[in-house]
Length: 361
Image 1 (cartoon, rainbow, N blue to C red):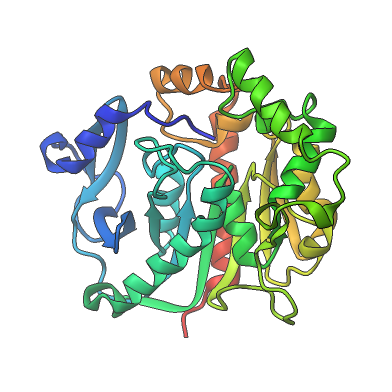
Image 2 (image 1 turned 90 degrees about the horizontal axis):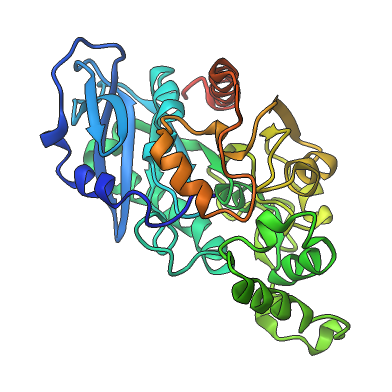
């Protein structure tokens, strides 16, 4: 769950990305370009024959061929959903690994829940995120340049942190805001990184706790519909997915305590999970462990000995400290964390999508 507002300079740099190119020898055949899906800004990362070059985005350093021509062949699509207050930038290593394996990767900047704009974080964003992904797929299918290069009968999704809500909902799992409230009534201290996310000072925490307590001991029939309404997957259907094109999902340290055990058990498509043993932002037993305990089609891909943000790369120290300062607990990188383990986790995510999305028709 990355903080909003910590990378405004990087955003300005992205708008005029070409100005930040530095000539160097190619290290990967990975292209990157901007795409617009209605009002949603999207970063596309894809295989190319163009030369990749270092790109400086504020404190971030990436490697890609900016606006390089995509390879003239068909590819599978993986849509990546960032965490709260996040962007595409800190997920570039995974996006590049997927592109290097032959996938086109689309990374929407979720409106109202990104590093520039945090006006809709939490349940409002949780409801909208799956729709963002479907809108991106539809926009690519309608774009002449990309439609000819994509096989969209089977699409992959990857979600990190709050992006896990995107992936689980598109898998068919269902959640309610009431589930969040009930969870935090019982586990606010043990899972405070989640329950009090964004509520740093005493007044904000007291207000958040009061909002949880207002529903305590109230019969569910008397609670307002916005608390009780099911969100995410489809009810009363043999296939609970809201979009049948979604064929494989991977999750990294996902938000998951809001999902019912019953709906997790209804998931039928393959879902791969990466957990972090020392995650204090989303405690594993309430989130990634909850998914693995109840979802029969879910598989543990990797269990890293680090924390929540050790999955991100590039992750400059200045950004890491700024993001950590916004967390209730557990935001700093794990001392001594071996980055090779992150690379291995990325490789397992890539292999998972390769297994379940390929070959092409």
